[in-house]
Length: 331
DNA sequence: AACCTTAACAACCGCAAAGCC
DNA sequence: CGGCTTTGCGGTTGTTAAGGT
Image 1 (cartoon, chains in turn green, cyan, orange):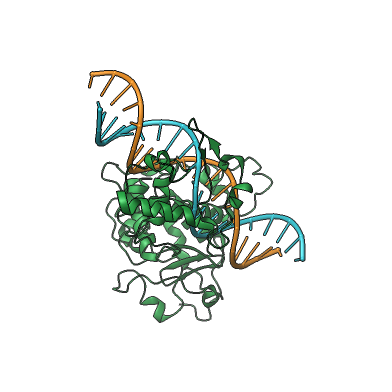
Image 2 (image 1 turned 90 degrees about the horizontal axis):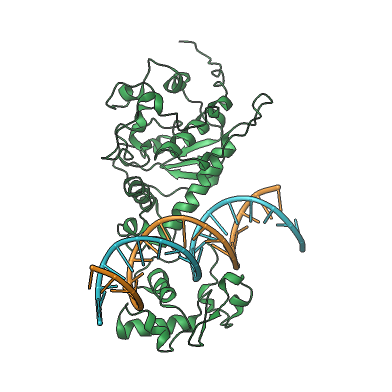
């Protein structure tokens, strides 16, 4: 789904038409010199003038564009337009690839919301691109996490904070998604490197040592549907695959093995052993050991403190796992 | 067809760092 | 060194298309 492309409004060329329907925030105002400062969507003519200016003077002295009467835009606005839309070699109108997504996830975990810094690792992407991508993704994950929680029971009427409404550890977002989807739905699909929840693309689980920690530190959420899919799972040399059309992975899903849930509820079985993690803490150790989210300057929390950041009643909503499907041959 | 929701994108604002005089 | 200007960054909001109901 491509977003709005009113910008450049070159298609209609209606000068000021977008401003007229814009909010007051984007209406122009008049500065001391009497020149009305234009705001809002850029027109193709303005872009041409700006590009011509940069060709002659280089990407600097943005304020002089207005002082010279070339454009009724602030220097700030001119710079932003150049950086985000007019600069050569920008990947405009092209969605983030799984590999780009993986890079953003890795670097966001490493650097935090340093979008400009992250963008330097992504040729053709701007800090605004990365920021918007991240924001959209966060909303998607938050929505999926919320929708994965079963309805409240009558004895649990107290308000449950939205998943995204509190400060979560760097990888808690992932763990919440993981936990909630694991427990609650039968429509979660791992197809290739993509994880789908309710037939919606949720995230990439590209075969990378870093992608959310899921690729290597976690077992697959569900068994891959086919042998072909199996080949694309972590620890293979297959490159990341783009998410396939949704129609291709709708269907009955295999149930996870029963002891799968022991990773969350038992004290004996532990990811850290089974999946090669270091450390001796029980479940959820994988969130820190070997995870790209483990920062150099951060120590893993004590096992008991890991969930302290969560609302205490969060897991009240988790229902026990469904009984194992009847097997024809008991072994 | 109308309305609603979601995703993607564009562009604004405030603030701070860097540069200049 | 201090003040002013410019540049860059991150947060936020607004707009629109597409898809769903």
